[in-house]
Image 1 (spheres, rainbow, N blue to C red):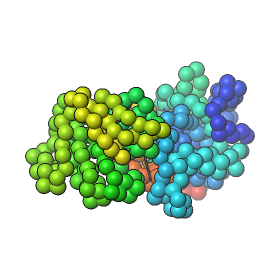
Image 2 (image 1 turned 180 degrees about the vertical axis):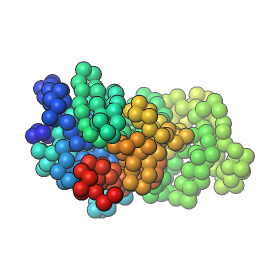
Image 3 (image 1 turned 90 degrees about the vertical axis):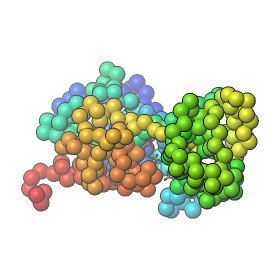
Image 4 (image 1 turned 180 degrees about the horizontal axis):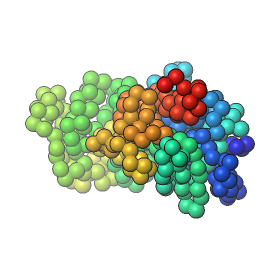
Length: 330
Ligand SMILES: Cc1cc2nc3c(=O)[nH]c(=O)nc-3n(C[C@H](O)[C@H](O)[C@H](O)COP(=O)(O)OP(=O)(O)OC[C@H]3O[C@@H](n4cnc5c(N)ncnc54)[C@H](O)[C@@H]3O)c2cc1C
């Protein structure tokens, strides 16, 4: 491998990759699926183990919105998530012999640790000796016209990420479960102005949490979003089906997320009830030669620090797996 691209792949790149895959001598050591913080970290560590890496990404996911990551060490003013991705790709570009980046959505994968794996996207095929899944999750943000520019600017999902910046502000929590009620209670420790909107025909908030919300003076509105007023991604108000206009500074969506686990299912990996991939502390999955890192697992909290750590750990475990017997201690 002798070429790295950090922008969208053109047809030539796709053809090159396909040709490479067709040649038996060009089996990659590792295919990393997902170039968010977890996948970038994994690819970097593998490159520095002098492994040949294929890194696939489609450019959607949690690290592609508008948020500034405030709590990642080394960035006193925070770092925009897309800038962190750009920096990660720039770091990888220093290893052109080791890493190839391809803008493909991997739609199929099969194989095993003994014979290797084949990954597929449209008409292309690639071969690799190990697979690292860093595919993240798909958040269920409320959808209204112009919702996406709000994500990371005034629409959030996690108090750890964005609670601090919203101290003392008007916060609307959206969700109909105890998780949403719990988040509202925790945000109430940062601001007196919290309202909960169920945004669902269901209301799954238990009596216990309802009592806590009542005691804290947090209004619960059983109503659904139908629109919003926003300027440049800054929400000013949301509008509901029952004709309410709720003025706000920030919306915290606690409506869940779906793990991007299609490839994990295809490989027969063990999944948790939530759909996240089950891994051990070395990021090994239930299938030898397959590793998982970042938000697609539920080993650690879903933060950039954890994703970067898990990517690094997965890469080290894959590298060890690739050693010939004489280099292994076991
Ligand atoms: C609004 C918001 C604010 C946040 N703020 C913070 C913060 O302040 N601090 C913090 O630490 N964290 C924050 N986070 C969380 C952080 O973004 C995630 O924890 C982190 O992005 C997880 O990294 P990841 O690599 O596991 O997944 P992702 O960043 O989601 O990356 C997964 C990648 O996999 C790719 N992919 C998926 N399936 C395929 C496939 N089949 N083929 C090819 N590519 C595929 C996607 O395109 C995507 O690029 C925030 C998240 C959001 C949404």
